[in-house]
Figure (tube, rainbow, N blue to C red):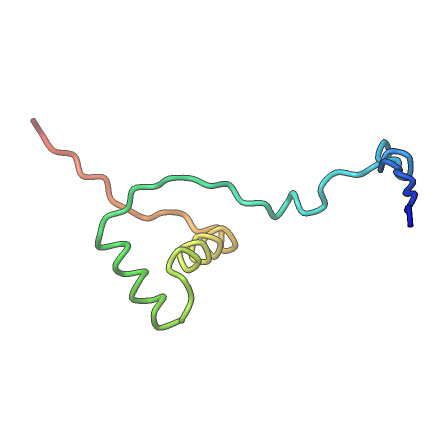
Length: 82
């Protein structure tokens, strides 16, 4: 028995010329590298163990919370005379 198969390419069936952009593009994340002290990493790791979520997720949530509250950093400038 011989089978005959008709091969059609996707371009014959679908027209992507009117497609819209990626609807998930606004939720894509950008990978960065940041140097944090051991103290900061240890703090978030201990907090994440209590919350049972990954520490990197906890840091992201903390930073998002700062954005939502429009928090401004508070620190004092210390000038040292040379």
